[in-house]
Amino acid sequence: MPPKRSTCPIASTLDLIGDRWTLLIVRDIMFFDKHRFEEFLDSPEGISTNILANRLKLLEELGLVTKQPYSNHSRRMSYHLTEKGESLRTLLKAITRWGLKHLPDTEIPREE
Image (cartoon, rainbow, N blue to C red; front, side):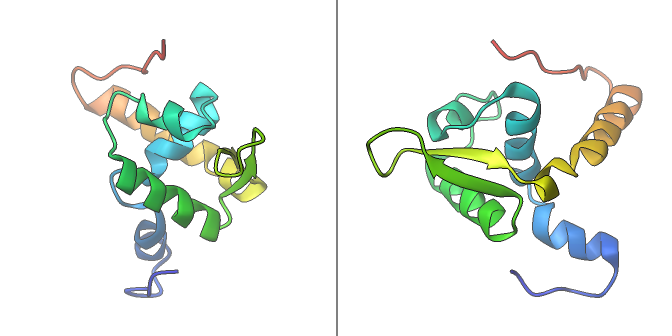
């Protein structure tokens, strides 16, 4: 875990999930049923492979996701939210409501 800047719960939470990609990966698992590396790469925000690998590893270290092989190939992993990861649902819904209300030209994404 990265070092904390302070004991403030907001600052401490942002230290863990406040970068531009982590919550989008959680969003993709939670709302768009994405579980595989290639599926995350298809998201419209365009995450790079090295950043995605780093964030998935971080999410696993934080206990927000688990990974498990999905084929006979040992390097092909499927990622799923843990109970701790699933507990971010309320936060993500609140961010969605706030964005829809206060940011022009936003909408709930529709995955193809």
